[in-house]
Image (tube, rainbow, N blue to C red; front, side):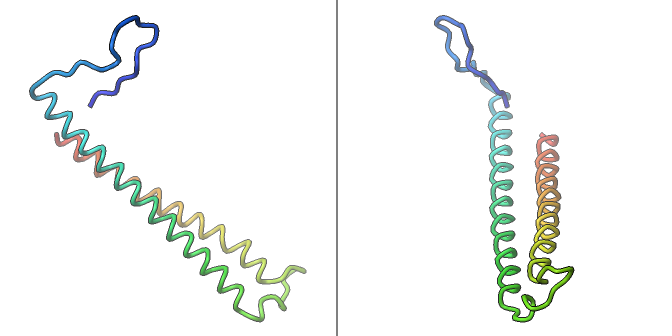
Amino acid sequence: MRVTAPRTGGGGTSARPLRSSGADDAAGDIAAVYVRSLIRSQLRLAVTVAIGFAVATVLFVLAIAFVPGLDDAYLAGVPVSWVLLGAGVYPLAITVGALYLRAAGRNEARYRSLAEDE
């Protein structure tokens, strides 16, 4: 795969790269398929993680909202529902972020192994 940028300051030259024929084209097409596959898998992962995080956060907030005794109980002068919300969402976000990084790393490792085989 070849990455090119438009030429600046050139008079009448084209910004389109010259393409060779033969084995380079086939290898470039395969590499492009691998890159598109990686992009799709990373996008799918990101959307899945974002939806999962949103659902988990909403369920956490709803659980706190519908447990009746949490607003009446206090911990260091602060309602327990606030403490749970403040201290519970951060570990959830860190866990989701760590799981996302691990899965994204696996996707990229899979891509690298496919690209090296070619």
